[in-house]
View 1 (cartoon, each protein chain N blue to C red):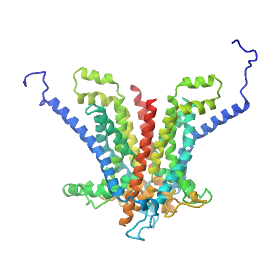
View 2: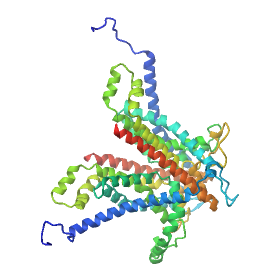
View 3: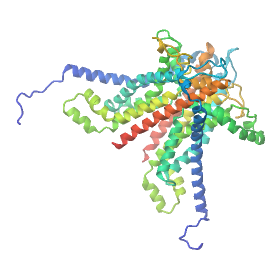
View 4: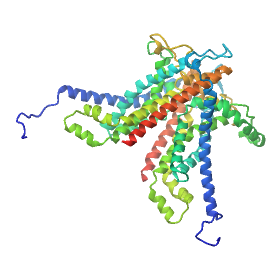
Amino acid sequence: MPFNEEFVLRNRPRMEKIIDQSFQNLVLLMASMVAIILLGILTVIFLGSTESIARYGFKFLVQSEWNPVNDQYGAFTAIYGTLLTSLASLTLAIPLGVGTAIFITENFIHHKLRNIIGVMVELLAAIPSVVLGLWAVYIMEPFLRPSFLLIHKYLGWIPLFGSEPLGPGVAPAIIVLSIMILPIITSISRDSLNQVPKKLREASYGIGSTRWITIFRVILPAAISSITGGILLALGRAMGETMAVTMIIGNSNTFNFSIFSPGYTISAMLANQFGEADGNQVSSLMYAALVLMILTLTVNIFAQWMVKKLSLKY
Amino acid sequence: MTNNKLSFNYSSKRNITEFIFTFLSAFASIIVLMPLIFIIIYVIIKGGSELNLSLLTQLPEPPGDDLNNAGGVGNAIIGTFIVTLLAALISIPIGVGGGIYLAEYSLKGPFSKFIRFGANVLSGVPSIIAGVFIYGIIVSTRIILGSNFSAIAGGLALSILMIPTIIKTTDEGLKLVSNDLRKASIGIGASKFITIIRITLPAAFNSISTGIVLAIARASGETAPLIFTALFSFYWPSGNDMLLQPLATLSVLIYNFAMEPYEAQNQLAWGASFLLVTLILFINLLARWLSNKTMEK
């Protein structure tokens, strides 16, 4: 069929243009919501804490007295608790998580069994933290207490184990936290180990190295950047984790070196006191929230930078 | 035989080291799996034994009223659904819309780089901070019709946690749609809007819905953003202004009642845990099924 003479170049109807343009503006607005929310969070928390910042300044970070009656606030115990619990749980979780990731990426066992382990690890991540807290308070802590008592009995001369474990405390909180971050470390390590090119492994076997020499000298170094990124993400999660920690850490603002005594983290303090606080206490809690926000933001941004900067190698 | 260099020598230093490390990594996997197994077992034993009709249909009793009976969690089940639904209604349009902008309109600009970065940062913000934020702008200012703690505030707090996940999965899902489809659609005269709505979104439907379902699964178990936004209630949600009233949810009920000194309330917390874990595992299986369907395509 030859070209129809009636064929004319059709202008797009005005309505179509308007719809197109307004749709684009609408989705642009929605994408901007991410930035708006982030800035909003920072603004609200910063404005809320200005009063307390002006009053206590940096002393807030190094004093541990928290006394609503005398209007004296210092968050040292909570900040120390946040850093201690997250770093200690990371130390526990890294070898276990990376070890598991190696176990389910190498062909030690049938691949169906490996998949099942992978799915189970992901399911562990799906358990709500409040349920984990309930389990920790009523099952895990009573179960672990005898071994804590044993540690206290024989190593009690070290300040870290200096007080008698009587129930909720920092040590069970560390263990619960490491359970919570294990899935993150394991699944990110597993993904990055899977992405290491097969050639590297074959070359290593070809020149006569054993399986574990290949893992330690070839595969892990190749995947280390994204594993580190995953570990940093887990650190950020551990710092902000609230419910399970609030339930098991004992919520005490008295500073104590021993990990068997009750302690506090910033997020636990917020969960416990924010609902009933007023006046200066609100602004001090906001100040603590600001500290937490800065800590997690730094860790998260660093993690992203790390993944981006170093993952381009392969 | 020991002198035969070609046979496997079990006692050589190198093979023993190999065995030790294999054993250690297997041991690590077992330790990692143990908590999951123990949690599931205890939730089933202690929570499943609480399961009966009154758990599902009755209201919780205020702690200390009746030492032998704590009632049920009926209002908390409904509350969890309401607050999750609210959060989904807020976050799905924003998340999918934002993802569309990133993948369809501005694939590589500095703005989309910044938004992608922002979505990653936002997903790392502690959930309690989302609660503090909503408390600061909505609960304490009573900005929504003078209401204080409300279901809407709770829904908003949860939506902050869902938005980054949905944006990221929409973005990823749309990026996987073949460019040929877009060109073909534009080529036969469809506008960009029609192309997105009729061609690319349906093509990416499975991966986007997987992301949404995963975000819902995470949100329905969250407690920290709700404890001072939706608060808790001992009554059924009712009346025209029920979204402006405090609302009970399963997760906050578990938190409140687990910390009570009364045995009956603690039992109720285990029962609620059983329901919540069942719900979340079910939603997760749904997401897994959806993503498997995507793989098959």
